[in-house]
Amino acid sequence: MIAFLAVVYCVGLYLVFIKFRVLPFNLLAQILVGAVGFIGLLVVLFGMNYTQPFSIGTTVSGLTTQIEARVPGKVTEVDVKDDSFVKKGEVLFRMDPQPYVDQLHHAQSAYAEAEIRTSTAILQTTQTVNSASAQVQAVEAQIKATQAAIGATESQLNLARTRLKEYTELKSKNAGSLFEVERYETDVKSLTDQVAAQNQQMAAQKQQLAAAQAQLVQAQTAQQEAIKIQPDILSGLNAEVTGAQWSVDQTTIIAPDDGYVTQVTLQPGTMVSIGPVMAFIGQRTKPLLVVTVMQNYVNVVKPGAEAEVATPALPGKILHARVLAVERATGSGALYAEGRLKRAYEPAFPDRMYVILNLEDKFKDTILPIGTNGWISIQGEDWKELFIIRRVIMRWYTWTNFVFTGY
Image (tube, rainbow, N blue to C red):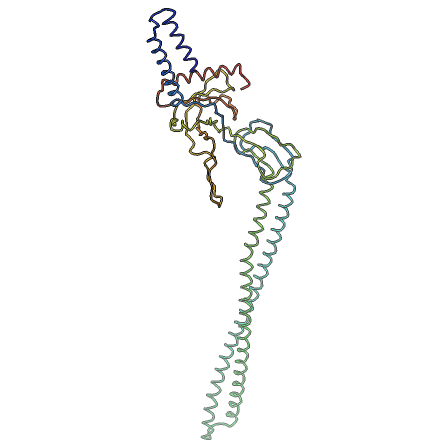
């Protein structure tokens, strides 16, 4: 472009000084026009190159989702073709689920068996608790009956003692019968022996009650342990069932969103391992322009600045875009924890910076495959008048794409 401006300037000098002789072409004029031309071209070159960023390192980029195989297996069916559009939830491909179905059935059987076993243990301990509780109640009832019998016997004994005392006093006064005295003495002795026997019986029953209560406590402990351990056993086995079901579900891979897949290389019979197997590009993903610019443009490029894009994919057309942001870092400056001191940084070529642009909405239906390259010019805030030169360069380039198709 500078050469073009120089040619235009020289043609103008020829017309003014040689062809039409508007001004005399003396030594002073020669020095002036030479100095003005040289200085003017330098000013234009400096102003355009610094204030109006330009780059041929432009790439159409898009957010790509890696479709991964979450479990290893053999591909049995591929339901999509290369660059085919799919809707969210549609099947992309299937793997042989039988190994994981077998694992699922095994886990389900183990869970059912454990559920029956633990439920049976709970039922048995519950029956033992009920039996022990009934035994305790029966012994308590026997003790109450014995206590009542002892009370009745003691009442009879007290009455017999009272009668014995009365008849003994009457006998001492020769008013009573010796037979009655002897009869009540016999009754007192018999009732005393009976009370002693009943007390011994109640002591034995209390021992039975203590033993029955101990058995009840033991049975209740076993019941609580059986109830407590069941969720722990079943939760672990249920996790295995859930994991096995998840593995079965992962043998069918579905689209995460509306979009299309590209570069499909899967074929039925392919053995895949855990990892990415397809590239998915969402329909809602808006293509972005990733531009690499020289470092002296970092503080010249501002978010919101107007930009023009020319790409070999669209010869003869200029696309308009806006600057979204300037990336804050590049990989060459990343520091990683290595556990050792760095001795020196090796000298490297200046890294180019990344600028992200967004195409205007009127170009949303324009077909721009991700990975398309091109040229881009960004309008700076200073010396905006020089942006016209960039516009001319961009249009010259886009029209040359009709001829130089090998770029």
